[in-house]
Every structure is written in structure tokens, then in C-alpha cells.
Length: 322
Image (cartoon, rainbow, N blue to C red; front, top):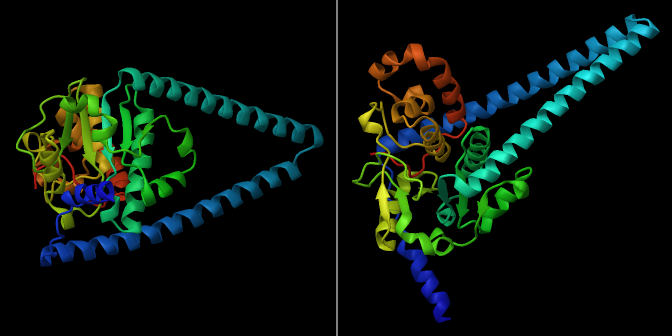
């Protein structure tokens, strides 16, 4: 009983009372809800169009075979089999290379932790949004030439249940811990660095011995300062990304989990913060001057990342300034 009471006290330590939303925040929430509805409609339209395209291609193929002689039909079928075989072999080789990179990252890669201990503060929809962000993080990391060593800590309850529903999650080359990062990495506490918007320390570089923690918390407006408070009470270091040193944000500097991790991974490859920010941060979040300055070099890539960011636009506690 005493242990349960102590655990409950520890849990409540990091729970700040939710602050009521301001009128501006309410407008942003309404705008976000409209965006999500429009996104769902667009997704349904794309799915239907994809189905129609597949049906059209099938009919075209059937028509081609029907008009061909027996010998031509056999050649067409054999040619299609060869193309399919080559495609499957290419995918198999790509998977092997990915596994090799991620296996190596477990030994020498930069350790990056996603702290999932805030799931009790989120609704099922918000947890689902975070799970989608984590899925994107893993995909982006796997495509990198020098991936990081990703950790999921505090992975339990509904968060774990939703993650388990992801296709192939059990085979992910990623650390999955039901324990908190403090427990799982207790022998390396001196190297823990919590990335939080409220830190006064700016992250100039990534140190290989450090372990960088990102708070997995959707709808950050309800829980301002919670990750900073948690880090201070645990006695671990904090830092924030140097976004303000390289670009001006048009609105809030809050980023999603997948955007923060992609920035860190890009920086590991380039050692260039500015390039990393402009490749990942959506154009809608930048001031006009920054957009014009980098339009020629980065427009195409940023538009692509903007679309990806739109699919995971919920706010989380990220290394930037409010």
C-alpha cells in the first residue's frame, strides 16, 4: 500500500492543473478541428481515386491480354512476372540495408528517447495522433544513412496497446521500455538531456554521449511547462533547439514529435542546424522573409515535409521557445 501511494505521489508530481484555453487558443483549436475534418475528407477521396486507378489498370491489362495472340499473351505474362520479381528483390535488398543500418545504430547511434509517460493526460484520439507520429519517426529514421538509436520509454497502458496495433511493430529495431527513462537509463542519468521549449539553455551541438529526451504530449496548450517541471524535479539537464538563431516563426514555435526527431536526424547527417530546420519545419510556420530567402533552394523539399507535417499537426512539448 505504501509503495502504491508513493508511486501515485510520484505520478501526480508531474501533473500540473490544466489551464483554461484563451480565446485565441480556442480559435486555433477550432481551426485545427476544421483542418482535421478536411484532411479526413481528402484522405477518403484519395483512397477512392486509388481504387479507381487500380480498377482501370486491371481492365486495361485484361484488354491487352484479350487482344493478344497466345504467344504474345505468354510473353506479356512472363515479362510482368520478371518486373514483379525484380521489384520484390529490390525491396528485399532495401530492407536488408535498413536492418543493417538500424542494427549498427543500436551500437553507435545517437540515443534519442520519446517519453511516453504523459499518456494518462491525453484522450484516445490524442494518443492515436502521437502513435502516428512515432510510426513516422521510425520510418524516417530507417531511411537515413546514419540513423539514431530510438527509445520508447514509459510504454504501457493504452499507449502500448495502440502501438501494438501498428503493422510490424513487434519487429521494429527500436528500444521499447515499460519503465521510465529514469529507471531504464539510471546508470546514465548524468547524460540525460530533456529537450523542452522552456529551457534557458540553447542546444549548440549534439554530443554522442548524451541522451536526448522528447516529451510525447499532444495538445501541449493544456499542459504548459510540464516537461520543464518534470526535468527540474528529476534533476536532469534541459535544452532547446536553436530555432530562433536561424529563422523566424510566423506563429507558435511548437513542433510535433516527428518534426523534432527529423530535425535531430538531419543535423546528425549534415551538422547544419539551418539546413535541418528549413528541410523539416513547414513553410506555414515561417515568416515571409524566411520563405523568400530559401524559396529557390528548399521550396520543393519543404513543401513535401509540409504535407507530411500536416498529417501530424497536433502540438507536443518540443525544443523551441514559446
